[in-house]
Amino acid sequence: MEKSLPNEFQLVVGLEVHIQLSTVSKLFAADSAAYGSPPNTNVSVITLAHPGVLPKLNKQAVEYAIRMGLACNSAISRYCIFDRKNYFYPDLPKGFQTTQDRTPICIGGEIRIKTKSGGERVVELNRIHLEEDAGKSIHDLDANDSFIDLNRAGVPLIELVTEPCIYSADEAMAFLTEIRHTVKFLDICDGNMEQGSLRCDANISVNRRGDKELGQKVEVKNMNSIRNVGRAINHEFKRQVDLLQRDEQIISETRLFDANKGTTSGMRMKEELNDYRYFPEPDLSPFTVSDEWLEEIRSKMPLTPKELRDRFRKVYKLSDYDIGVLTSDKSMAIYFEEVCKRTIYYKQAANWICGAIKSIINNETDGEMPVSATQLADLINAIESGKINHSAASKHVLPFLVKNHTHSVSEAIEKLNLNQSGEEDISNVILEVLNAFPDKVKAYQNGKKNLIGLFMGEVMKRTKGSTDPKKMNDLLRDALEKRELKNR
Image 1 (cartoon, rainbow, N blue to C red):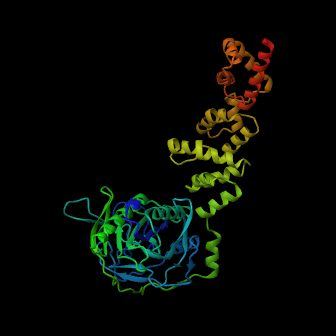
Image 2: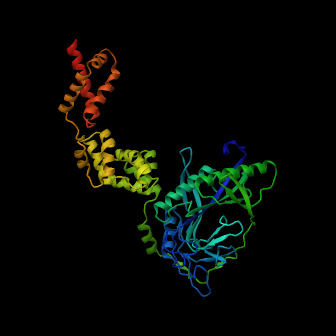
């Protein structure tokens, strides 16, 4: 869609990503932060802002925010205060939101993304700050009334704000994909956009190329998937270009995205400067991040997707495709490394996991690894040592192990009678096959060399797939050649 628009216009996007932190309790109260509880059950007098109650900061939420900042190469603020952001909304029981205005926990930073052309781009961050979530307004349960669920009120968030430095929908989608992977690998958020754990607002403007000033900004909300963020940006780009071409004014407003229609519609006007009357939260003391605390958090940091990609490229010499598949899911990346602790055949391990193992996960086990890392490593070692061939391993041993978790690879091979035949055994089977098909042997000797496949198939059938294909091929061709010389 973007390529069909006049090249004189430039799309500029800044994203605000709200990341719900996976803490047990809320940011300033002991209420459960669990998703899916019956409406208005995870609430207390602190959540409901009863008079005289005092909030208390959740230390785990602060550590998760710092963990994200370290992953993004942000500067970590050592002295922080919270502020009250005052506005009225029915699902905001306090009448204000406790957030960080002047002292965000993380300042600056960057996220590196892959472009569609295969290159790399840096998306600059403005800040990452801590704040509490609002409740949820539900408008589709009744024709006349809206309902309020305050379970989410007070759940800890970090808001990650980029600079206006994203220039296409593809870049925005790549950025969100990397953010989603990062928070999941860091164990700070489940990244589930459908449940609202990860939410994104896009600030979109259009200007003519070469203009120093950005165009009028429009904010788009209500996007529950990475794909819909891309669709909304593309639609809004086209809509704003159409307005500029007709010399019409772009109104600074908040718009909603309709996923069914793929369009945006006006929700409310935005003033040039929102007057939230920020002031320091009087019920919360400032907090400091000491050198010792920061180093403790840093020492417990899991590897980020980028660090894992770099590691897999350097240590295991894998292709970009294999790396992309293996690091698309944290459990799969961990599983690969566990397999590689038990075998030196790293590429073969990647092939098995990206192929057969991933297929079983998708179709049968719903995310669970179908065999242990030890079983897969032993299976790979058995193939590479010549104990069993790849075909028998994939067709017989692996399915057996999936159903029989307690069996070792050696036990599976023994039970299935798949110990690879020796050279003498193979030669005897080849002799049986050639004697069983004398007409085919004669046709082969008369030039129909493609019949080699028939002979190989018969040998494999009679040896139950326990024959090394390369060894069998060499012995079979040798036997046919000797028989041809004998018949001359």
